[in-house]
Image (spheres, rainbow, N blue to C red):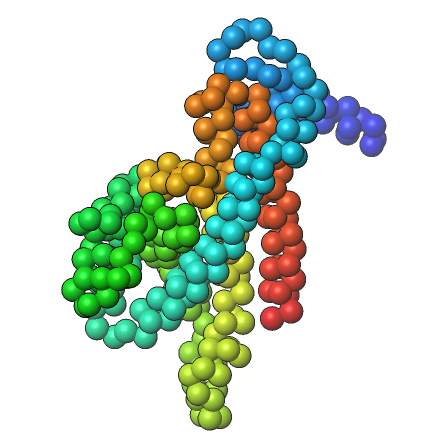
Length: 301
């Protein structure tokens, strides 16, 4: 009877309507994700220039060059620095804004809208806005320094290698913090008020309430925000392309930007694809480690 049941199932699997509903989405996913990914892995072992139909395989030469390239090492260092700084600052600012907005009694929706508004802008528009704000000659920052008598602190924020990457980090935090604020705000509104009232009756101040009740109960929201922030920062491109074009020199060149420059600017699609493959593996490994660590923290809390 068991064999007959298996045989019947094998004959009628195509009658499973769920498979037919899944098939169109899977076909599109295969065409636009799976096949390009497999093609990229193949191209990473070539010296293809992106135009010539003749593709020459060179084995692991692209990866060897990558390993010995100071430019790639610098881009990797900038990428990691950018990711760590953005994850910390975006989440700290977003959590602070969420706590602030959650406590506001009047015009709460107005403040939410104001803090969320930068998220609605594209990275390119945001980049142009901050290029104007940080301009040496007529930028708001330098004019403000002049107005308060600190003109000696004026600098070319995007043209100085010491401040260019920092300027990109701060402008990105301004744009992205509102998005993560909404996630933290949803987590805050899910915390039972009875816990806060009980802690207050027991004499716990606001800091102790936040440290021992609010923050631990936001573990789920923190996991989501940290994951999204890390992935977004590792593949950030548009702000860098608009604000600094990877400069001055190579001071703000990241892995995503060097992939673009190498593949399309220098006509080295094979090497650019190899870099993209390394970036994909890097993001995958970091994401897996983050999930394991943050999920463990959620269980402990």
